[in-house]
Length: 483
Image (tube, rainbow, N blue to C red; front, side, top):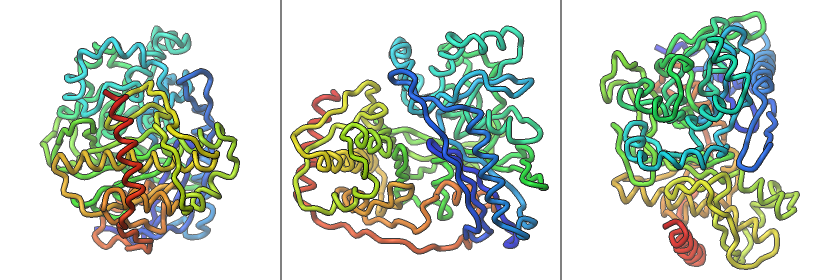
């Protein structure tokens, strides 16, 4: 039974910032703090972050959020951690010192190397639920083993640890220094078997990643350790991926609802009772209480079918820089409200994801326009890519009746309305956009039934023939170059 008096510290490490929020047992946010994290692009297709900066940012955000509670900090009961999936780190198992940068989920440096495994793509997808892609951790981990001398030295000395960013952060943040990996983040390494709940020997051999340097696989809910905040040491009982946590922001997810989280990337998920492969889409595990020893399909596990759009906020950031549009964030909603016919944008920023999967897809505009019109085209491409994924889900049997829209980009009315008009699915956008932390709190609170209902905005579907015509032209262009 959830203790309504308990408060929950939710640590959310995302692509551009680390956030800490405190929620109560009914889902109300009582305190929050954030610290930005810089991103480096040292070479083409390379996206990195400083692991020490990430650790410090989380510690500072957590302390600031707890300090904002004042005397109510005494009511904190547990903590949880949600982390950007597919990013990896290598570190020294004895000292905890990072031996590599955080290699981001957006990083595609090993794309060419990964092509040699194309003949095994079906076997990889069958085991992992994922596509053969450089966005996932296997090729990044192998790259570190081959190219970073501190990693090779630690391997020779028996001190090497490597794996998901979540595992590194748990090791550094929690007193007990656990060397573990939760299902959501472990899966994104492309080395984790969806059926056995453990590292897959065939995949480890295929990609050349030794098992003894990888964390132990544990459930989503686990005694991970204790995190120090001020004079308190809170037990950490949930570690998961950011998108997995976001699925639970408003309580138990519904099978008739598609959950769209719009951030640096955009992710659309719908819940399925058991792994359900759909062409071009991913099978993800959002929550699991079982281990490799206790696995029972369907027992306390929640799966999703997932579509990924790599170029969401990242594409708009690219457009702002490329088009020299400095006021992008402030002006985009107003530009989207104008009546005009923008060009089309074929969006491969960060690599073209679901359902096409082309890592080196060349982004380009079709048609001319002023910089602001091209910015609109980039925004529309996000809606178009999400619509393609939603259509694929429905074609494959998902009986969807509505959308829930969260994430920073969900604040853009024009983008939300376009997605609704394209799909014909009405949408709800909650006032609280921090879906990841809110979902983490629901899990920490042991999945209460009486999770607080919060206000928001409803978007009914409206007929928009011009938008539909642009979408059909865009889809034809995409399919012509993707096949």
